[in-house]
Length: 366
Image (cartoon, rainbow, N blue to C red; front, side, top):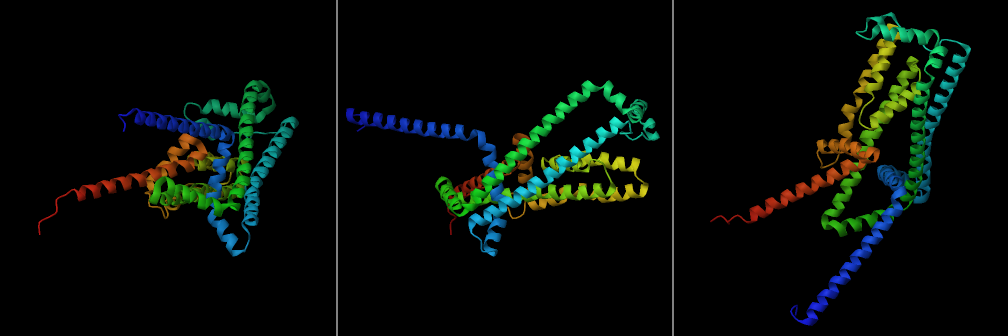
């Protein structure tokens, strides 16, 4: 029938129809993605948050006999409080500290403590550092006046960082509200996602969906949970020891722990400061308390991230590191999910090849 005039016309008509349909589908998908682009990061965070807290949400809903909307609203309020409380306290602490230092500078008091004599013994730069430090300690006002241009540049740089952090907090707060909406309709959305997964990957679709959810929850516990625990314990130690700017240092430690850099590069100078300005007993106790905390993430994080997953721990850790480098904090979750699904597909493909190879072998003679 293809050789006939009518057959060729039918094939041409079918080809045109398929091309038009594919073009329309591609146009709708492109316009939809274009419309969602401004809120794509917010929606990604909302999905990650809703998947991460869903087990707790489900337990609270069943134990307290709450409707889905009420439980989701309570969880959203709780997460907003947990997010905004440390941010407000940190901002108030930073503003109060800067105001106090400005008043001390105007009164002509010593803002910078005098340098210890051991600084002179530092190789190569000891004498210069000691002289600069001593000048800043004796007459901080003159030092500020002499370097007003550099200080203004540093101020603008810090202001840009503060503005970025503020916008990030607002985005995260919006993601929490959207996550509450997703949790309120979690049963319907779960059924839809399972149907879509089965439609895309048939029998393995639901398995991939379970891997994605488990990976997000494990990464949340192993990365963000451990980072929060580590930062809180470090903050308690710094507050007890009387370390200045403990709130700002804690925030920096939290960010460095989440992005997989670790708080060591911040806390080691703090430990050195305690040995320079605190009594030896206090410095020794602070060091003995802080050093095990710096190793806490190396011990607990791999255990939590690989718990209950068929994916090896090395794949999860590689996904966390590579995802963070490629996509920032969102990549922290997307990376291990993608690598976990890819690993599972690779294992299934290898297993299918082995079965085909075994079926091609000749049947052994009795």
